[in-house]
Image (cartoon, rainbow, N blue to C red; front, top):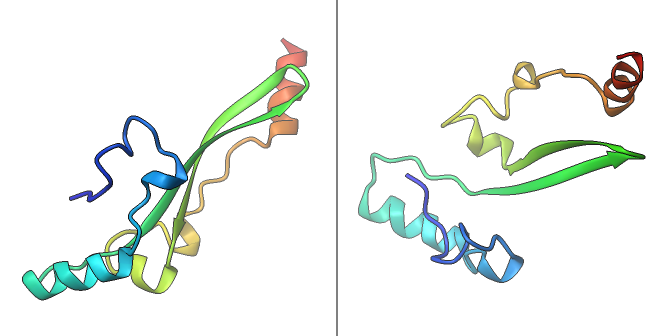
Amino acid sequence: IIVQHDSYSDDPALQHLIAEPEQLVAQIKQQHPTLTAVTRLRVDALIQAGRHGVALTISGVQPNKESQVSAIADQKAIIAGKTLAQFTNDQHMQ
């Protein structure tokens, strides 16, 4: 279940973040003691070098808590892809 500000999906600006996320997590845990709740911050970005760009999503997590609900915080979960330099070189080769 994702809990977010009503306007966050349409406009993920800073003013649409949950103001007191830890209080909300505590409230959820109090009402549903068997659930595990964590906070995350997600940022969509575009990295550009010259004419070439790569879209990405960055997830900010609390590793000690995130490991209870997903593998994002696991060191082995880092997915190695092409760096922007490799991507750019590949594009020039084509």
